[in-house]
Image (cartoon, rainbow, N blue to C red; front, side, top):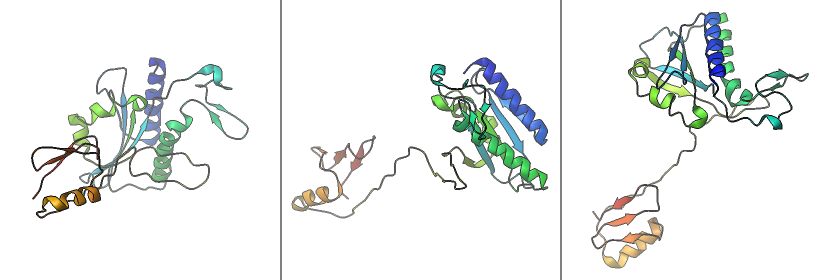
Length: 220
């Protein structure tokens, strides 16, 4: 991402933090080109595990010749639509966090847990220079994070879909105890294990097609 845009994002978030009377820190987990901006809303019971509302400031590549509006101008049309790269992924969510905090603070509300708004620099390319290194740091450990919200998908109405994970495999393992003789072994294998297996010379079986890591099954 262009250094000019990075600096503009950081300054925008600093202004928002000031308008909300929230402390803000800029963290550099790897280098100065990839800052993580952290806003803190102090909870009434700060010893409780905190909550992170995470967003990202980077966007996917732009092919400007395919755009009807300049991709970084944030043009607003007569229907209230904003045309800009990243307006959905995920500036809309990042600004919703700010708007929600602003509305709640206006009522005098204070959360029980401390809430951190984090804006990371490289989510679109894997997070190697942002969140991945930040979570390894002593700084992150001191945040005492108990739960984190991230992006989901946009909605055209007042319904919101909740997602518990992204691109995560669910696995089910069945463990059968007891001793079996050779005549029943094939029946058990066909019942519980896909047929593509490698049979070793010992009583162990190496199963390679259940997941990306081999699993060893041994007779009890």
